[in-house]
Amino acid sequence: MKKILLIQTGGTIAMSAKGEGVELDPEAWSSHLVEQIPQLNQLAEIHTIPLFFEDSSDLNASHWDQLSHCIEDNYDNFDGFVVLHGTDTMAYTASALSFTLQNLAKPVIFTGSQVPMSSLRSDARRNLINSIEMATTGLQEVAICFNDHVYKGNRSTKLSIGDFDAFGSPNYPVIAEIGLNIEFHGQPESTKGPFSVQTGFNNQVFVLTVHPSLDHRILDCLNLSQLKAVIVRSFGSGNFPMKGEFNLLPFFKKCLQHDVIVAIVSQADFDAVDMTKYPAGRAALDCGVISGADLTLEAALTKMMYLLAQYSDTDRIRDNFIKALAGEMTVRSSQ
Ligand code: ASP
Image (cartoon, rainbow, N blue to C red):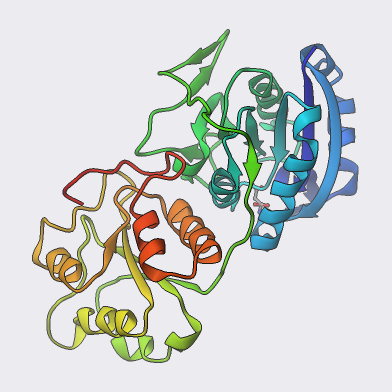
């Protein structure tokens, strides 16, 4: 029988109803969850680790490192890992771990729930059973298992607040669907070298959402000497205001002069930024802005934070950012 490590980090799956809302409940700790579903023991030999206990909004890069090291320390003793996690930042953590866990040859499955386990119509039970089962398969990557679907971790994003179908991977096919059987789509990733863990994230990154009427004087308040990169959430295919007082190009140029990397992703979930298509993108490319292609915001941010911690040379960071390091982006020549 396969040995699975269930790592508890918190989230709604570890909460219970409180008045009108929900809150973290130590009784919903991972070992209690397993006791509530004794049939889980038919799927695998499950061991639990209470790593931390937080609403996922309170997680940061130090938690990503902690979780990576927890998997590293237990890697040889288990066949697969399930991480119980809040849905709000699950895609950020899954993306971050896709960079830290290198040459992963075992499944690392993130799951959680929209409704606490103790509530009558909770999705926790189904998500937990599915995830344990997925962790016993030959998957060799970080994935999110939610509502009978398995998504590539660094392609995933939270799409719904209220629906059980909370996640999607807009620019990448679903890895597997769970019905009567587990149906895998396509060829799963396979690992080429020895497993290793490389942690460290630099949070000197600012995410700028472009919007109509954005006043650049607000951006002048940013202390660029404290920043290493700006991720710009542009309109559509890499567009931003170019005219008059709302022209954002001077701000991008100022960043680049301060050795602050500027990378563009899209506010649209589907498809990739193509900076060659419209004048704004072309002007940005000409002055040294780089394209995030079809990266999710979660993958773009964690990738940039990861690269900034690994390298000090700006060109090396830029070169790595536009390459796929862990299948997180589709690289096309015209981006
Ligand atoms: N606020 C919760 C969290 O992310 C939401 C959830 O788990 O669904 O921890």
